[in-house]
Image (cartoon, rainbow, N blue to C red; front, side, top):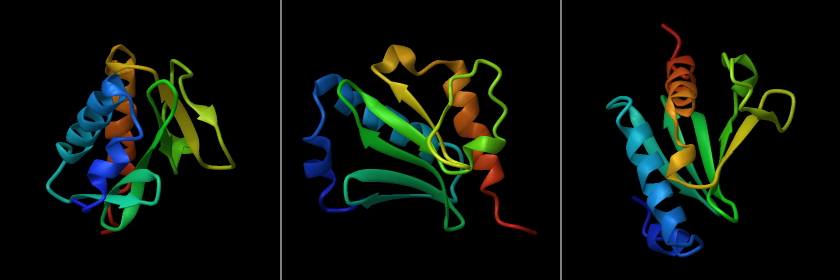
Length: 116
């Protein structure tokens, strides 16, 4: 992990830090091909060089950005448009990290698969 990860975590309150670490563990657990990187004030999860999730600080909690979010199945309408393709969801605490958010994360990971 990036040497400034500790400084990145300092931007968050205690609950937010737990949520960041939980999200990072979740997306890294999706597959051995997941790379996590720290870019300025955000944490990126990528597969085959394609970023499928971005995490930024919010007060309270975090915001997850899905760069290809417009193609994700979102029956609960949790995703908010950020641009033509990108969608986001605000997680205030670990209680917001429900099955629906986990499924969105899994779907984003699957869609980031390198072409065969």
